[in-house]
Image 1 (cartoon, rainbow, N blue to C red):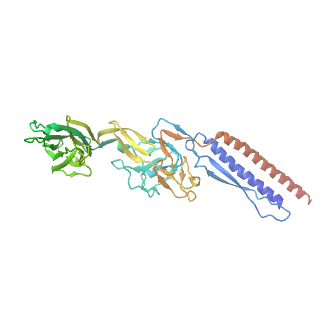
Image 2 (tube, rainbow, N blue to C red):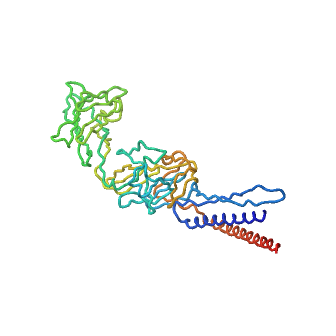
Image 3 (cartoon, rainbow, N blue to C red):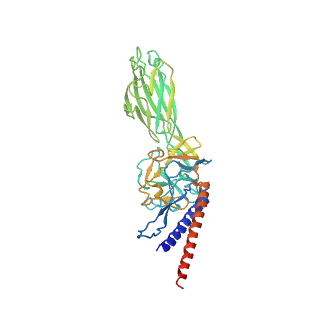
Length: 434
């Protein structure tokens, strides 16, 4: 009957407004919680089949969700490992048990921001126990063979294992000019010596010495040189590679390499312009230049000038700090000035962010409502940019919540009044039979 439906509708109104009051309370309580996504509630009217000449109230129902796609303001901090996503997307994290478990057994959750710091074991974690996950880089700082539709390739980020590092030298670029007059007949034929420091696999400083000896003809100019490479780590010292080089004197390619011959202990690759010197610590690629190219070794009418000799590698260094850039790369910075990419932190996305299941400590889990997970590189596709030295503020607007609180209080009181009125009417009805 209509009176009973009025009572049921008002009780439903009390129930949903009590739920709304709980969400408002939670939002206000977490207005200063970094990374908190406000709880939102939607009311839906309930309609039941009506009979002729009467009306039955259907009442109201409520659905509660976290507004995960809402973006809080970013504030700057003094910590390089304070991390937030500026835009759509979330950061992958796990719990403490996940630091020792296989990827298949590790729990995976997502968060929009976190103040991460290294614990006693070197793992980056928040005070709430969320451990940062990322893809591990190889020794060259490259990220390869990663799974983007699952957390299979993610590992807990640990900076303690990289406390000390030595990066061996694997490439040396020779930007050197050899004096053209040195190959003229009547020249002294004295060699030009170029020592180059390099670093072996243990971070020790070693020296490659290149001797450039001009070939002196009986007349004219040969434009040819003999080059030997010595390694200080080889005992006794002996050439580990040698080759002859001839330079072009044509109008179009004067001063560039014409050909390289008589290679010993090495092979010249004309495509890459490199020779391989087998040093004691391993092979080192020497870039001498391509045929008819101005880069690398040249022979011009000028002095012996090693003006662009560069190499990779670094001596052993102590870890000073780690930083996360806007590409999601976590770099270690050593006291030698050497920087090395250790991990890449991806940005996770799902089709329906508001369908994620909320967890404690501002975490979220993938659900059937959220859709399948996908990991993007920072700043690509639909996702935002990872931002270090930053935290995301709560999405709660306290002023709006207080307004909703007043509306909820009035709605609750009004529904309570209806319940009291229906109760009085039912009492009057029962008294009619006495």
